[in-house]
Image 1: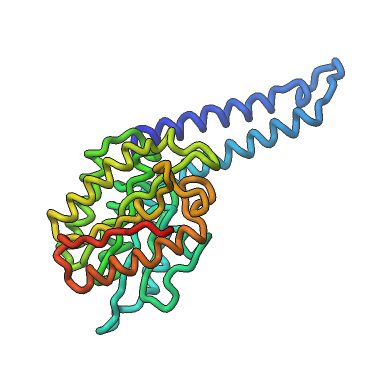
Image 2 (image 1 turned 90 degrees about the vertical axis):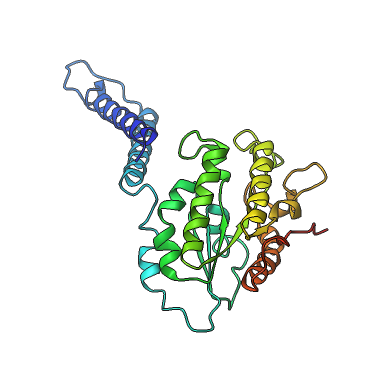
Amino acid sequence: MNKNSHMLFGLLLVVLCSAASAQSTSPASSSQAMPQVSSPSGSTQSSADVTKLQGDLQRAQDRLNDWPNLARYRDANAQVPPRAANEQRVVFMGDSITDGWGRQYGQFFPGKPYINRGISGQTTPQMLIRFRPDVIDLKPQLVLILAGTNDIAGNTGPTTLDAIEESLMSMVELAKSHGIRVVLASLLPVCDYIKPQTNRRPPEKIIALNAWMKDYAQKNSLIYLDYYSAMLDDRKMFKQDLTYDGLHPNAAGYQVMGPLAEKAIASALQGSNGQGAATARKHH
């Protein structure tokens, strides 16, 4: 629960109460003797506004009650069986790009003991809070972390690259302290071909965070997974044929990402020292 969430909740509550008050005291609902001219379209619009505000208020309340969304996978986690002796279990920790993999577009590694723990819209501090129940407690051999684009966009408030890096480091340190190997994945590029994306996620910040991740991986015996380079076009933007909105991959985008992830996972499980970090190559 943070200052921005409190402000959002308070603002929505005030607006909702004002809208409800306006409806209850409007001429159409009063008992004045003078006849009033009704406006069906205006009434419908007012009702729609109140309904939207109620929905926004409920979402704000849900976020206040469970900011990291620990409830999302609670039941699913309880159903995960103990890891078999020879099982190479992998947890994918991330945001909507992970969440949508196999659920919205593409296939999520059929037949593999891989577990998707992405949550749309999340930032690294939210993932850090749920890292224990959604990763550590599942006892994987490896975690693949893809996170940071929503931090840059300010989804949970203004932040800095340093703060994003600190959250990523904390997740890595938690994993390593529990004997879980780590693949650190680069952020994907963005583009404005379909809808504006670069204003919220400036490419220079994506490039800077990816450069830090690559350096950090090399210094800490991790595998760096470079999705970014494989998905760039000649203008250094997200290839239009690999995305449906300039931010998220489509089925073709996940087809590019899948083999790169498999290669990085194999390198990490084989005990690569990280100096030969798994690096994506452009697919033409």
